[in-house]
Image (cartoon, rainbow, N blue to C red):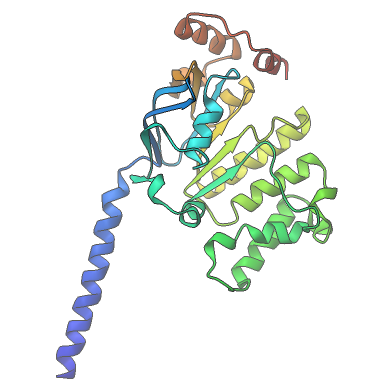
Length: 287
């Protein structure tokens, strides 16, 4: 009798494992993130006009465009800060509107140009906060938590400032810290919105190098919104350009590898039917 019950338990366990494997296989061939026929308007002002986009697993995609082109609105929709008027956004085949914020935070890391934190929070506590979405209520720090915190402080050269208030750090230090906090547990996808835009060129390069290191070492899928044309071409595998609420240029592979900033401007002019005249983007040519 006991042997029969044991066999039934084993069969039940095997069936559960098979169900989980089948469920995982169901989403295996889905893109890391997909935007499908996305529309959005502020009142009568149509900002996005049927944007569709697939972000492939393990790839780094950069997206750029002039102010008002729709890239910031697209980012806000992809981070659940806005709700689409029409269309859907999927994370490995699952509609993000069906994910609660904690479940979404476990899978998606977000770093923006300006990231707020309490004035009195310390460097160490801010880094530790990055583990929160992956913990149960009232759960303390594990040995792995402690190891990751020490690693983050070391890689950002902030070990000696661990007890200092974040408000007393430089802009570059804060942004590096925010990036580390966002990736303390490897996310499915990292979404970056102009995360080096407020920094001087030298500091921006350091933060971008840290971004490249984290993404490569952890094999993280990444989408970066930027106004900097050099960054758009140097980082990752694919560059998109937006204009008037649509993606008008999508370059990757060998074509992108050989492109210069001047080539990118020429391609934009061909696709948009006009020259790019945004000062902020054009000034980035000299950076």
